[in-house]
Amino acid sequence: MRILGVDPGLRRTGFGVIDTSGSKLQYVSSGTIIVPSAASLPERLQVILDNLREVARETQPDVAALEIVFVNTNPQSTLLLGQARGAALCALSDSGLAVHEYTALQIKKSVVGHGKAAKEQVQEMVKRLLSLNATPNTDPADALACAICHAHMAPMLAALNGQGWSTAESRSSRSSARGGRLRSTDTSRGQE
Amino acid sequence: MRILGVDPGLRRTGFGVIDTSGSKLQYVSSGTIIVPSAASLPERLQVILDNLREVARETQPDVAALEIVFVNTNPQSTLLLGQARGAALCALSDSGLAVHEYTALQIKKSVVGHGKAAKEQVQEMVKRLLSLNATPNTDPADALACAICHAHMAPMLAALNGQGWSTAESRSSRSSARGGRLRSTDTSRGQE
Image (tube, rainbow over all chains, first blue to last red):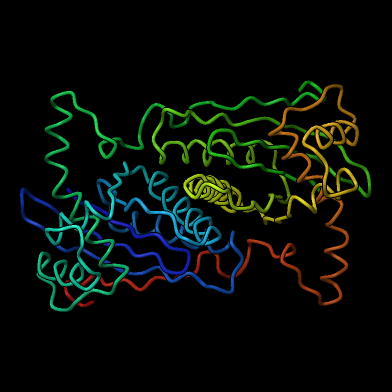
């Protein structure tokens, strides 16, 4: 299974791709989408959308994983982050990928072993678990950590689903909702 | 000029299309994208993305207009609204449309004549300005109001731009940023 992890942000969006086979993890690719800060909001979202779709096209993952973000103390930052996250989710579902979401706690527990790990500990463990020669930068490290978390969780989710359990994280984005006609349109003048 | 106005929301996204010729306004189409509340977040964003792209494909607008949203008192709602707005902006820029953004104050001033207008006044004025037989629902009315606002502002923006002025609202999403390679990727293992 090939997993694409994404750490969305309006200034920098990190991504990381790994392969899993049983408990074995294999690094494939990682990087950062640098979003031009001088551009308008629609332009910046388009950069995330275009580049993340290109990553998916080039690396052909089977599934995607994202961190569930917590609201910022600054409401305006929360709104901006939400829009960046919306663009990232659109790129993933547009690429036909089911998206699994994990909390920071789940990711840290899965990668470091406890939920209070610092950024540097996550980076160090990502380096070790994927046998990298160098420590990855923060954004791709967070994206890779999210992918590793899904690699650890996927067998459990599969087992739970097999038993008829359903969890928030096991919900995929590819359901009957896709392509459905959910609009009420009034094309004739004054009909509304 | 054909203008597509959008009022994004995670539960309901309104849209409205009008034609302008000089100071003449002509209603073309409007409606609401109903987003299934039981679906996962990625699914819901995909519904907005798919349906809004379809609206753009069917109605072939020249330009799009959106309301600049203000942050909600509930941070979680702000994050959700941000993601819905991100999906709407992606659909518009994906359809090749420049996006112009206006504040609620600008829209109300433009449509009703003052910035403290109630929802019902906006609906009533949209009905009058577009010579509709019936009052449009809230979501499409807000979307149409945003399109009308751009119809009123566009000549002024064009004049300002001609004089070398630049305003936040006059920035379009179709710039050199599009399609640019803005990623740093490390495909070789351990190179990061």
